[in-house]
Image (tube, rainbow, N blue to C red; front, side, top):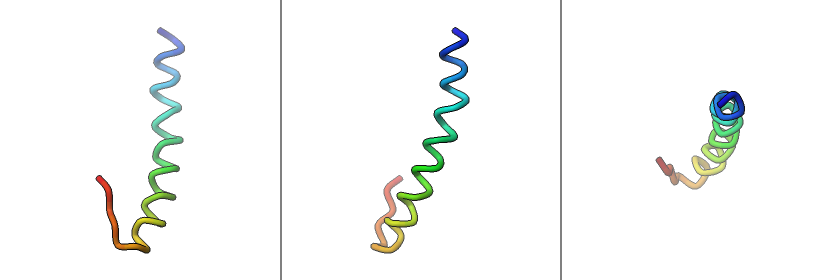
Length: 34
């Protein structure tokens, strides 16, 4: 359970990073994927 809770806390941070980078590149095209 400890590993799972750690992943849930750590993964979202990395995902937010990627989403921000992808959002920037997508905004240039005018395409927003939700």
